[in-house]
Length: 253
Image 1 (cartoon, rainbow, N blue to C red):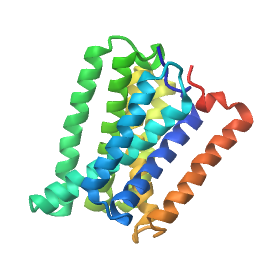
Image 2 (image 1 turned 90 degrees about the horizontal axis):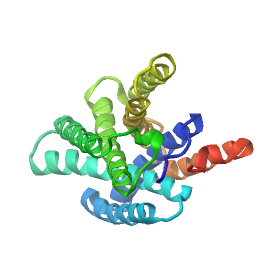
Image 3 (image 1 turned 90 degrees about the vertical axis):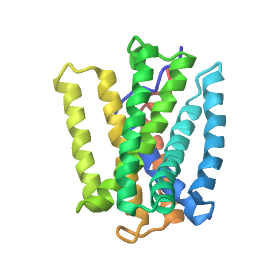
């Protein structure tokens, strides 16, 4: 029986860092490397599948595998979302990009509802606290991937279809995340439900932050520079926590 890492401030810092890095890395692969959204999705899907199988069939719990799958899920989610919104709805069906973001978000909300319905059907207990068997671990990662894909679509929707832009969208989502944190401490709402709400919110935070770093409307670092900066930040977060107690961040009990 496997467990997710200890959930604390540094866990969420790593999640947001991985999501932001996934957003810029997805754009790097599909745009800067000219693989396109379809080609980038195929390459990343293969890498994600390999890492997923290694994680599920690993006899020992290896933290490096957990964070590798998290990062690949975020990166793959970026290219899948862009393929649905931009390639399929915009280029293939002729909708505007803004309409593509809207339809893509609606489809992915439906997908995540289906994913969680299957999850609850096969998981009768609180798997966040009680652990994951092979089946529920597979469903856990599918839920993470679906959340990542929805996060990119919803982040694009906020940034492009509302007056908020990348920075305003990020601030709004951080407010939502703060509300969820408050619910953890001041209510008796299921911790598993709040965990998934936080996961769903952190993905569009990563998407809007990533776009803010790379796009001309934001800091305009470009995909390569932004990806390198985020890798460094990811490592720094791990190092800072290591000074205290490394197992709180990376140890999977």
